[in-house]
Length: 379
Image (cartoon, rainbow, N blue to C red; front, side, top):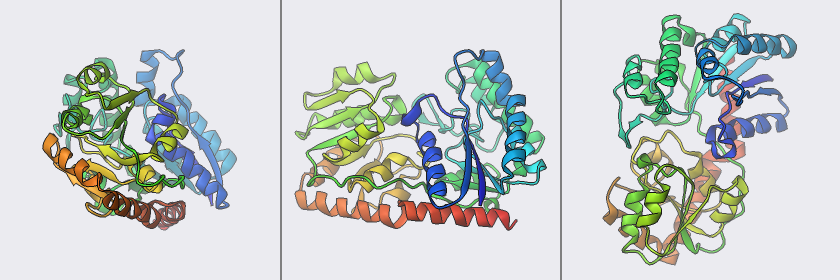
């Protein structure tokens, strides 16, 4: 099968789960014998804010480039991921007008929410769900920028009015939760196929782990603060990896058995997972399908997370990890206490790697992609 993959690349590089999904799916398909071409433009420092805003609405350069790629490669399927700001929904029209089937992975909630997370000021916010996202402009939800928020809201509004998203044969939400949120916003369930992410195998964890691990952004919606409150009553070591606006404040409140580390490479995360008793996910927002969970599973590391968003789909409590109520230090103390038992940590670790093998392995990832492409071609 000839496949063209399009993605407006995030500047966060390997730290972006979407960037990694695009890279890994392209490799997976190519190694299976498919003819794959990938185009992943990223905004450079030379591009002005005005040009970025214009590109988010209608990128003429991206439309021209996609036309050339289609003429040269003759793909049967065009698989789009992130469209903003370098591609714009205009490429959906171009691809469809050329007679090629277009599919789009729904990694998050960008079609209804400017920051794509349904959070504002660290709390769940769904004011724009099912509506044009102009309240997101009022609150400067996209990177705290009024012009950026207006450009993105304008793009979504214009392309909804022009029915650009009707040119998509199928959407691939990465979880049932993401599917259901898009259905609430008005997208037909019949136009969506849930396709979970996959990840490559990882070196298996050594023993039952020596420390607990948090790896991610240090921002209010991730609620690392509650985790640190709990750690005042916990003796086990905790490693916090990442950066963000709350880092300095969190470091000041952290007890002595909490170690902060800067953001590390993908290989660095793999190394940390080998010594982790559990990966911790204290988020207060509706995560769509965090890739870090399945990366932990691939290493045989259980995950403790809040029962929000897609996490209850990913974490089978008592089997591959534990689910806890958000915002409560006492339940974190209880969950960590349960995992200090070596037999419990080993059992949940075995459940984690079984969940990866059953749902998120490369074999299952390839099967899911090929099936979804087949469904799109049949429409």
